[in-house]
Image (cartoon, rainbow, N blue to C red; front, side, top):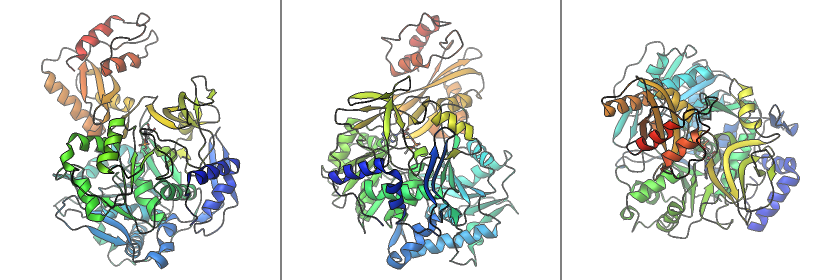
Length: 634
Ligand code: WTA
């Protein structure tokens, strides 16, 4: 393993070197891993098609770098500390040696079910160690995992299974979350009833042990599948550019797309960022509270920490169960040194009152992190003072599903902080701000759309099954640049502050939700003719979902109608996409060409109706006043 950046001067010199000689820089990082066969060419790329190849010709298996290479030195070290939902249950500790055994055994089970290199395996599981084992077992045999967050509905799950043509689904019986026991396997059954013809088998992990129906010939218990299987399994060597996983994410238009990451580059970048951003020291305990259903969990619960030989906590539950002091209790219980969470969790715990964190000594804490959405100053200060007791740096890490790893961030204890600023790019990352005409905005104290000018090892390679969509979405807006969809400010010191999405994506509690997706779901509810969805500022969630709906006639029972809409969205997408506010409107403001003027709807949703701009060019300017009036009761 190569060293860590240790000072601001070193950061600046590493950064300069990574821009002057990106290939030399990344080749050096990559050479600290084990490759079955060295790469022939470090980088080959163009953003036109786009085509990006890192470490082309190299052969490897990421799990050999996560597991095998640690066995000699860290076999007995704890890799995973699993904290169950129920605080009265014992935590489960798994060493690197044990994890290796579990992964190999399940890899053998997958093989026995006929899973081969390149096959897609859909994973719909709660936060248990078997979830990590599932991802790694797929990677071990060169199968491509597609994890679907276990809060998505059967309809969403079915869409993703069909898009990836998965042959096997891995799931669990139930999901213990707070006081709830959610029937996860039942959702899989419902999804498969929607015509997922590619699926041959469902492997079911017994988590709670509550009763359920198994489908003969299709469903297999996890414990039966691994019975008698060996705890060693030679990893399948894959090409650096072979697909490692697909992860679906929302965009401005249409259904979620499957972002594709590949073995070599993703491995190099997640390990490099994990080690440097958090300044991980051997023996420390690291805890990321994300769910593995999202990219943060993939990169910074599963791959990054294991590649770096870290010990990490994995948490099954929720921050408020059994009470809002749970996070702090877990930090004390496992002597957590590095704690990485989302602004929405910080705001929720802040709102629950200081009594839960006050008096909690957490001397083990050294570094705090946030991810997923902009953090507001009040939450930043509270996190810094109340949780970190003013002695822990906060790394505000900006990145995306598509970037694979952390892009703009302070390095813990090295980069001077400014609240709410993601600060400076990682070495190897060349961000720029662009105006509406696509011209790069030079200099400091400026604002624009955030783009990246040069490839980094874990940039997305394609969107599964639809490369043109990848080109259109990320590489066509601005020539020769990757467009992030975010707006950002660069201050006088050259520090970046992320403002938020500039497209039709809403960030609700750190989860990306496309307005088009929510509209499609709402439109399926009875009596809905048309809808328009926008985001608005929400104290806890960051952004809330505001839905304007045109109905086919007057609604007598508004409460019942709203419930129908919410139930439909829950069924089509999942509870995370439920609108916070619903307003029935007589019409939607449209341009003469029929385009909905979302700008006006956003303003009204924000409660700012003082300056709606010029509405006279609208096809139907009269609806604006009516919507303004009605907004008061939404
Ligand atoms: C937002 C999550 C401000 C941003 C890793 C981005 C952030 C989207 C930050 C990606 C941050 C992520 N500050 N905004 N530190 N981190 N975002 O794909 O809008 O779930 O485009 O990846 O979250 O969300 P995704």
